[in-house]
Length: 221
Image (cartoon, rainbow, N blue to C red):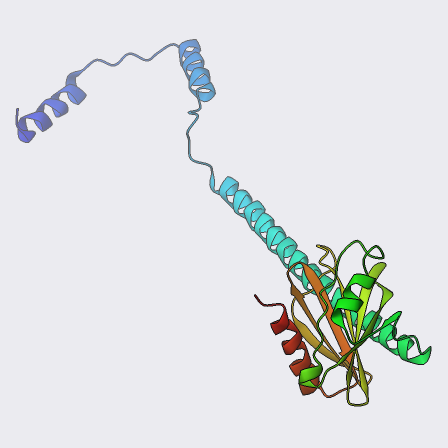
């Protein structure tokens, strides 16, 4: 049957077919059933989509805010921790000069200074004499920084004193290699082989950097 014949047949049916109206109670029952049979996978209404987008946007904004807060807290936490340690090592350096207590063991022999720490600390600090490079070892002592005992090695550069504080790296209180200047003192910090080092002196920053680089080279294989 072609389209023309199909159209003619439809027209005849509409014109000549007999129609019967369903009873009112049957129509009401069918309508009630259709109202209850809402498909499960019907697409959400426009208002539902708008509400979902609003909550999604709020959630995304909240997550972004939390990430930013964590990042800022971490950055400022590390910065505050470093500032605190800088202040402590400078205070210890100045205190050792004021009370004339630079050394508990006075010697330029690293094989004398290093064994002296044995039994006094829970770690063995590396000790090197840099006298050939104008930084002779003077001695060592015990000090207290960041709420725990540390080793303090004392070096001399012309008429200036350099204190090098050493302690094992602690996850919650270690910093990466850095330099700082405060109140006329220069400070450098670095880590090596599980140890945290802080060098402080009133010598020029370039001279302190040269000293620390020599000290770091000594510990290389």
